Length: 120
Image (cartoon, rainbow, N blue to C red; front, side):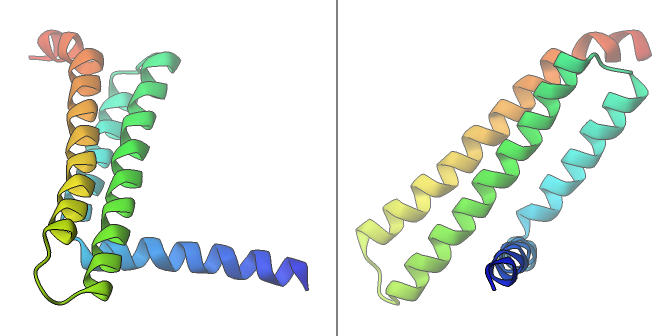
């Protein structure tokens, strides 16, 4: 019985990820950015440590976007009226995604800027 519960928890987790992709238009942009970063990593044969930073940035953006989606859903479930704390919760969660996106741009610059200069 315990094994079934673990399987269902994985199914629920994947369902949550799929739900976030359906609810959040930015998830498509994150996927596009991730694919570009992975393709560039392969093309330029980045070193293991550089690739670790690229992967970390990708996962960081996805994780924060998932948390942002969860916060927005919980806030929307709790109140239909405007409340300053609801706005704060949503803005702070969105700010976390922004920080993750900026981190990913910094990583991209650090890993790919020199390689792209030689490419052009």
